[in-house]
Amino acid sequence: MATRLHIGAKELRGELAAYAKRFDLLEVRGLDVHDLQMGPTAATLRRWRRTVPPHFEFAVVAGPNLAKLRPGDALDAELEAMRAAATVLESRMLVVSTPPDVTPSKLWRDRLAAVVDRLRSDVVTVVWEPSGLWEQDDAAAFGNKLGVTVAVDPARSEIPPGPIAYGRLRAFGVARAFSTTALERVANKIGDRRDAYVIMETAGALKEAKTLRGLVRNANAGKRGGLGRLIRPRGGSLRVGDDEQEE
Image (cartoon, rainbow, N blue to C red; front, top):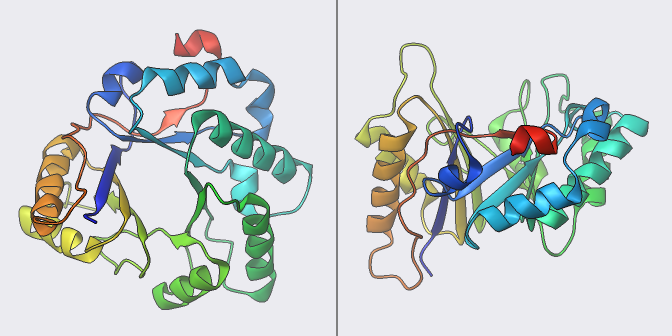
C-alpha cells in the first residue's frame, strides 16, 4: 500500500473550514490545566470534527504540565483533557513534546513510560517528540521499547523505522525555505510506510507542501492506495479556546 501523507503547518489563520480545504492535518494545542474551565466544550469539539472532511486528521498535543511529566494533579487533569479531546475529535495521534529538562536519565525514562502507559490504547498512536540531551539513536531505541512513534525533523535527522512517521520541518537561521532537493531527501526518508504526518513550519509551507506531496506520490507510483487530494497549507496549530472565540 502506498504511503498516506498528511500535511499541516505551524499556525492556523482564518476559519477551520477554510483551513481544511488546504490541509488534511491539524495539531490541536492549548490543553493547559489553567485554561480547562474556559476550554472548548464537547459540543465545540464535535463541531470542529463536523466542520472538516472525514479524511482530515487531528493530532492532539499534550499540555505543558503533561509534557513536563511531573506527577501531580496538573498532569492528571491535562492527561484526561487530552484523552477526552482525542475521543471527540476522533484523533488517532497523541503528541507529547517533552522539554529539554526531560533528560535520558532513568527517572525521566520511567516517568515517560508511565505517561505513555496511561495514554496508550488500541485506537491511537502516541507520538513522542524529545528535545535537549537525547541522542537520536537513543531516543529511537527507547521509543521503540515504549511502542511509540518518535517525532524528528526529517530535514536533519533520519526517521526511525516503523509504519508511521511524524516529522516537523523547521526553518533555521537564513534557511527560511526548503529546496526541492531537500524535500526529495525528506520524501526518501519517509519511504514506504502506512502513514506519514508532516508539520511544515516555514513561511513557504504552501509551495513546499505541494512539492513534497508530488515527490512522495511519485515515490509511491504504481502502488495501491495512495495519497489524498492536494491540500494547500496556510497555517498550523489550533489554539484551544472557548465557543465565542471559535465562532
